Image (spheres, rainbow, N blue to C red):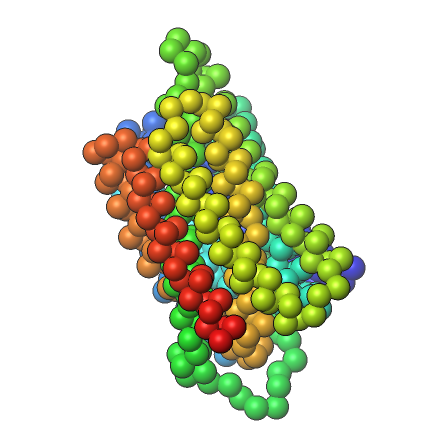
Length: 391
């Protein structure tokens, strides 16, 4: 194992923690600040809003000036944001902290996705394997966060999460993050003229808010179906385990995909073709899961649907990222990742806000009808991607 591979394996769980932190802390934060579902939707949207501009800026800076500075700046901003959130007493302060968390995470995730291409020769195996460690962080965060908040209180517990960012910060100092360049310089206009870039961006625009909203409202979906008279602490604990089950299956399906890809004898062209077909199948399955969450009236069924959503979600993004990275030269990988997430952040900002408004007016389950509509549109995009690439 190279040091770069070790660095990625130990650092990606922290990026998963950042991604899952809002969902894990939503219930105690909402209680602490007296937030309704519309304001919770606003927090989710603020996370998505910052991803777009910051990750695109990070891509330009990483390609032009180097990836290490972008990574170190991102980890520092994440630590500061969690310390701010731990002291938040007003919604606006929490909104600012979440926006800073998003900005720091965006910088880290831009660099992390490019480094996956450099860490292993098989990029489809690499994205699924390393994103599995990202999922590990997301899976453990609700469990750890609930325990820390219960044991030490909200302020100290969230501050302790912030200290975990020291791991990727210190380990990054000796890492070589620049890959070998090709002889010919590549401009940003290459991305703008390529239909695959736009199809990948539209895919993420419609996918990421569905995934993020499922994680953000998972605890609410489970807790609302608690039996009458059940102890409040027990209901909260089961709701937290529902979110952890989502992230566990999310992580596990990525590991399975990495193992399958590692043992595959398919050619590079066959692997790319299979990845596009898999996106179509996953979009169909996710649409059914969203409709199930919208109309489920039993806690056990909702729990099972969250498990299914985790299994479906796991390999979708790693395969999308691998398709993007294999399509473009390494010199524009930072900008390609930035543009991908920049488009994704549009959906990440708008769609959770719409879902939050629907949740406030008609209840959280009905908000997932919006998610199902997004997946239907996504199905059209991934079919178009497949037909264009095959054409």
